[in-house]
Image (cartoon, rainbow, N blue to C red; front, side, top):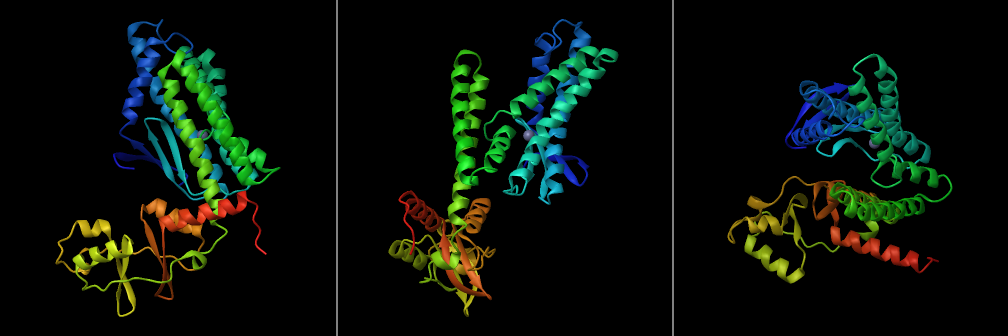
Length: 356
Ligand code: ZN
């Protein structure tokens, strides 16, 4: 993430802080400053009020970090790669590779976050009678809220994942996701309606939940359909290629003629680059393709699944992937091909069409 710096490393997991964290620290401090116990320090003397408000804001970010660390450590136990944790304006996020589609593992990874928040709350409330009472009571209450809010059965809250993993023990993963996403969207709408009367913050959160639920469902549906087909079955094999010394103006003519927006560049039978509409826009008509093509080629094997291609295209925001076997270009697959394949497979399923 841009505008972030490394804070520390715990058990091999790097924790980074994004600059926008400053904004949430200010909002939290102000919130504590004006709210009454147990959610703030409005009744205290001015000096103590300021000190506790700032301290509580920082402590909350530490609690968020521990929450994300709990998810990450649980994930690492199942050999899920954790790229790190980032703290930012909306709290924290643990960046990890795909969570295994095994209900028990997903359950443990998802539940460990809210459990850790709840545990922090318990400890903090338990020691509050003896030490920094007001501060620890507030901290405890906020952590209970954090645990509760994250347990809402709505994606992308942890509760959405917990619910799906529980459902997935008795039905297909896709079906479980659909139910959890529907519930998430219902929650979001209810929350937005409440927000109209109580707080615009709720509307904002509802918006994120709605999008998060739909996105989760979309990805799972894509995976369900696209992991059934291999690239060799869906790739385009009638390849239209160009040479490194082809002129950019010829590429433009080809685009208009064939309606493909990208072409593999081949030298002596070997794939050396890809030239796309974006590359052409930066060049002069008389330039040779070699000067403007992208040399960093991400290719896949014909035996890779269409879902792998979809993932690579989404992660790298690229529109097409050459399919290469033993160094030879054997096909090409584009984002719109993948979308069409998904549409066809979905339609076949809806109409319960069975192959003989
Ligand atoms: Zn969480």
